[in-house]
Image (cartoon, rainbow, N blue to C red; front, side):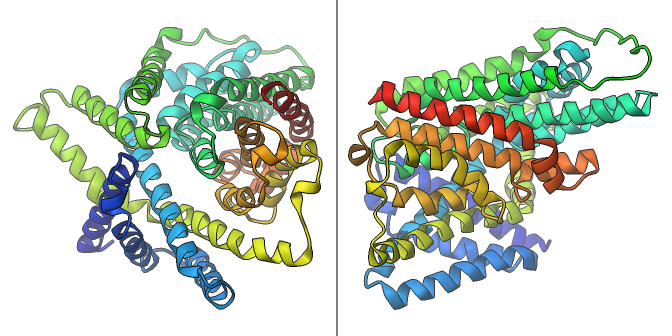
Length: 467
């Protein structure tokens, strides 16, 4: 990549994040007008750098914008809202990547991952599922890349090819399902950030506990199926060596989780700012402190020199290198917002009113519709931003906003397990030497049917309890 172009990209991405922080922290009247313009420039700059496969999403956004201008008189406001959504997604992603960048320089992360991968079969699934949740907090999709690589490396030491194949598949599924089970509850997940922004009256604090139930159901169901359908191996099973280290290796991740959640809770009580706005500040600050601890005494000027170099590498090399992911996520939010605005009058013209449907059917429909949309290439961000505005209000449905969030995030998590177009299935398929569609439908098909049915019951029960 051209150095000047990379530098410009990094500066604009950081500027977008900083403006979004100001917007969330009470300066919307100052930056609300300039933020969509900056976002448009960011999209343009990223578009000229990404492959044609990513440019298609930009082209779709342009076509929808033209259709919007032709059919809606207030199309400029919809475009502005779409650009604001794209700006938020960009800023949220950049904030999360700071934590992943800091984690990559930590030896304790590698040791903890290796410890999980070397667990004996009897407790390996739960170890990778729950440990994977902690890794997902820090590394996001990098958790799958790290743990998946360690799992494959660990399986290669197995001399029996049959055991090796089963071991690889079971470990990769535990990692994937553990990762997706964080999506409903983690304040750092796009599922929580976007769904709470789209549903009026919703907040992370109100859905945290029921979303933990969703996560527990996902992990528990996966573990039960892994145990019940454990493959039969001919001959004696090999004796496993005791994994090096102890569960204390997970302590840094647990402490990090506690620090982030506690910081969010305290600042929310003190300021009343939305959790997503707090994340935009807290996560980069935690990341910088982590880098400072890692680079103590580094560089010619001690700790400051090491930190300065790491920050420079992140801003002008690492962050611009993620341009493909960033443009995909931004356009998914924009396309969903604009597409929803086009669908609303279409539904009204056809006389379709979702409010006449039973509430339970709408909630259960969200659990199934989002992963089904993933089968035709719709990113969960796109699917949710498209569907959520069409859902009747919580008051009209007779439920709490939290009930709608629990249903949306349940469907979002299932989309991460089954869609052949999501990063989770693509990464797992790569490690398992199978296609992403094979991972979603063959490896996870039975799991999806069971957990979708269980979560369908759960969202209805919670809706009744929280009404």
